[in-house]
Length: 353
Image (cartoon, rainbow, N blue to C red):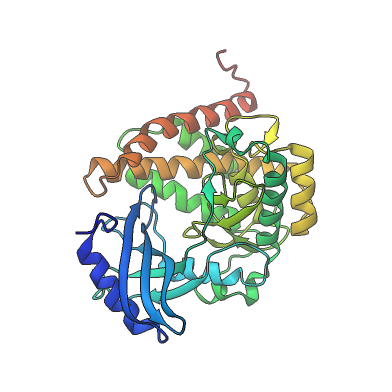
């Protein structure tokens, strides 16, 4: 087996499939195939192919997103594919959505294929300072792209053809119901802090959404790439996309875990006033502190649902990626502390120093 190909059987099957979908290519060979670990709902592979094209022997970089035996998050590949397509013309550096394949006969599971954006590196949320000296430039783009996603009209987007659209006053309840069920279904031990937060959120619902928007669902450090010269060149991981309240994305993007625990800089990138101003100007939304407060607490509840599902999948032997075990321990503890810190002053409780 060539060293660059980690799974020759998958590589051969992918090459055979690509021959049927790429009309202007023949004699397709997979020259590199490697698993990218860490995804919660898809097995992701980076793939290089060589083929005979109109300019002789050519090469192309692709990303393969394949359904795993057990997904931590209940997502539909059609939704992710449609969300990426919905960004066409919106100024968002999203990958090209190329092929969507629901039939498992080709690779043993349904999958889709995207173009690969070259020359980008991810931002580690625990080492955001590594983007220096371009932190400010990247921060402006980060919040501008977030606003641009919210500005896309969901009613006319490909995403609207694949999922239901809630009413502005039910966005919050739909999301809270979903993540409470994830916690209740997957918890291996009592979750008193998460349940207390859920009770608080239900007793104090947010204002209705100012507008309905496409919600990326996981827009944060770690899910965009930058070129090490001050530009974001890819926004990735659209598997949790849906239609809802744009405050959900704003709160998730600025959650303490994704911000390097920096309280002064939103998302660990920009001073809060500047970040919010860029988001408002680009999205067309008016910042509402009450809405942001609700969705910020919700973001930590949503995170708890993901970490609890991660721990369950790893413990049950359904997914052996070690990052899931780490998530079920470290990030679970981090968000439990975040929730306790947010709730304590609301109920007259003093957190220990």
